[in-house]
Image (cartoon, rainbow, N blue to C red; front, side):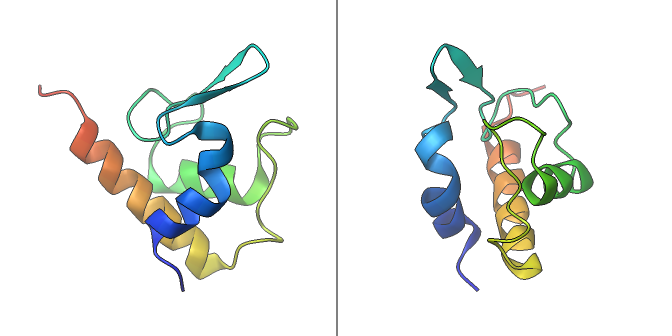
Length: 88
């Protein structure tokens, strides 16, 4: 199984550019630190990656990624989000 970072770079960074990004004029969420409309717990991230959002801007990856790859990606994203969180 590729690392979560490798999966992010291969499958997510094209749109999210590593720190959020733009498609047309629509801002995409900053996956590594910004607020996420569907939540940032493991279940919410897994569901969004697996099932998409119903928008062509965020497709479902259930047919392109194995469960272990989705789990690796979600774990890496959560680690990055914790690391990039502002101090409380």
